[in-house]
Length: 146
Image (cartoon, rainbow, N blue to C red; front, side, top):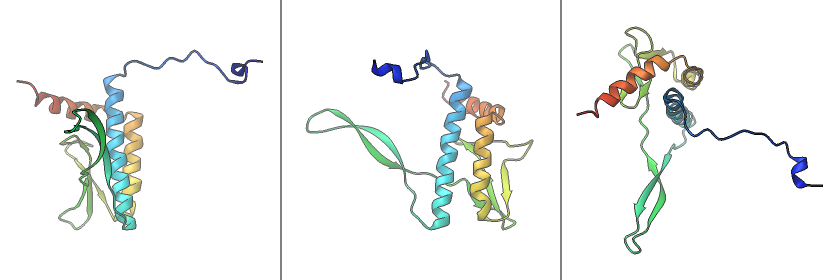
């Protein structure tokens, strides 16, 4: 009997391209996950360090290699004038307008920060913020045009 007979075979093919909307959702979700991890680390008193892969050229051999380096993650929450915690959501360097004229979420305490970030992440993945993300992406892209 063949070894393949025990496996469940399918005709699935890896997609070669994703829609720009799906790519923006994934990018936003990754940034929100970094914020969730940062908030959890601050609540427990642990040190948080996000990492990224960077390509460098070795001076001795002249070969390029990938090196894991730490990256700076700025927190999206701050204490507002009314002494309450506020959370603003960013796409790149742009603030997302969550509702007409509203750019931040007011929180009673830092205890609900992680839950709020997770709620925002689930709404991003479900597509509720697609219009706001597209506006921010277009503004960001227009800065690169000549």
